[in-house]
Length: 317
Image (tube, rainbow, N blue to C red; front, side, top):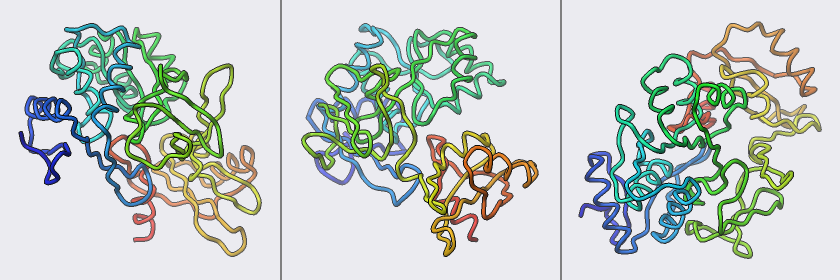
């Protein structure tokens, strides 16, 4: 079996075919090897996360159990195995005794990010047909707009929203509810406990995420990221909420400012007038942008999240 340079650690190699990756991963899990995944989210330098084989297997079995997946059922792999969501599809397939298929073939289950769902509903007929043929479609990696989910439902796509991250072996909260064995509590941020946790620092067995949230009627509501909130002149402003209010063609970021402490800046690919943008910010958030930058493309990570680190470099160049 081909592996990373570290003995006892599985790490996906881009040169591997999917069948080769599946075989190597199955062998690694059987031997109890950790799975290594590099992640940086939308900010910061890439870091390596080690996930125990037992955590990956627990996560996969939990997902298959929730979905009612049976041996012989098939997953389609629509995300790269270099990310947790892609690796999870492979592990779930291994647990069912099958190999993942592409969108050109029929599948029982799949996992996608909201951008893929948007594309399926806006012209990608092959992907749309594939998703309509699945019993369930896991949608995670980023916030999924409610209107998008309603549109998908009306077209016969059974979407299940998921919440999780590399440190939790991917999605561990489905449709707002923790999967069996998963505990959620709200501290300064959302905190998660369970057998699916990676080798990360814990407090009383809980992993502290960087996400803000609340529990309402037994369901977890994600309010945004703790590290995307800036304090501008005494007003706390969530960058993700600003982006949601302005639309997909906008990205928000903060910068140090001697007068305001942190200043709000906007980068956009749209032709919306500055005055209109400032009016929305003033009415909805009580602030105005220090700068509005016009760019050709908003940089995003592989999971379609805004890459704020790359955005900062783009603006400063």
